[in-house]
Length: 529
Ligand code: NG1
Ligand code: ZN
Image (cartoon, rainbow, N blue to C red):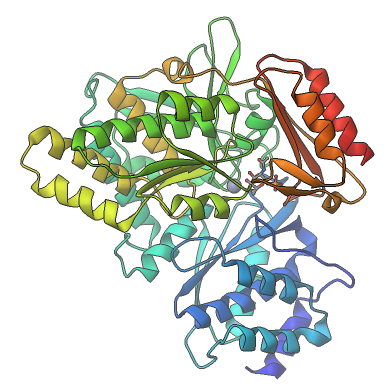
């Protein structure tokens, strides 16, 4: 390591005194002006991680659905997964090291993680459309370069596109070509193969209105449009040319406020969807003829995909083990429907994509979605091989055709991480193949009324949870009070947990009818603790 160069470059990206940040479920997130040193240091860390794994590592500069003034950074591991937990700790140590301790901290990380400093380092970098992102990604490049690493700057990309190219690179093209063109080609080919078989194929156009949160999704969807078949018309709204990123729009806004985004003109029963600021989340919605707004969230997306997969698996006659992974925020009605009506096993894990992804890897087919619309489907290597084999060699026509549909689904879904563009194409293909309207999809089950509130408390860490965050262990007495309230109402459920991305405590409550005061009482308990 060239310590002189390190010192010189680090001085160009100084750490503000006393500032400490933590690598959480969404990497580092903060006001953009506090992040220059973090970006430089994440460039350093990505180079080390690359040397430790002998693979290309990704660095994505984005703060997703947060306000435009914020920014953030996440590292992407070799197969496109989230950074390994032990390295999250190194990331926090490195970001918080005072200037004079930087060398020492780097050396310690190299020792603990057995980093061979002679090895090559390769880092892929991407960024969202925030005004601060360009300069911050330059700081990442400085960090990689000062340690002698090679980098490829993909510039403006969605978060899932960066995960995709990292995975392609490290699997030597097995997953696809590590370029945006490769991404568009792979997805559009699979999509076209799928919708060719839909009953309404050739009978006019399918329209979809998409709110792109004034973010990167608009740019990348426009790039992809020439690759899509002419009968699929996507209408892009909130493309970032007029309004601010995520302002009164985007998947998070629509989910939290349960109302349409600004800037999208909706007619009754029109199918609409929203991406978030870095296009890794998606929610659908529509208004009915009476003017009522209906949200179709991640739970209902997971349900639609599960129904479709289950039918296909029955057709191919394979007993592949499928499960749905949810978090505590999944609507209880969705869990009941999946378990009782569809007979699909459901598992609940802690909030944060890495937990869902990890659990989904235990099954032949793992469908995971957070209620907020972040999710994907994972196919085990064995399941994928079986399906591809059947699609090629199966003698029974019906079985072979069903296997081919599954094969195209495997290619259409971005298995590295939740991806709004890929998920949207999967959903559109399923709706088209099954001849379902958005209203019919919504009618699978009725969500229990629910409220998700956030409250600021002096120290959110006093709340410790267990049972996939559904029960509070501390402070003493809190859970008992929640239990006492909850047991008064049918199908009711409530829990509190400290957020991993904001300095707040989140409170969730649901029951079979709307009684908002229940939620407010729960909120009261939390603020007093
Ligand atoms: P926190 O702030 O820990 O609740 C939020 C979302 C997560 C996940 C992360 C990362 C909710 C209730 N929580 O986590 O689902 O998406 O951000 O972005 O939506
Ligand atoms: Zn996002």
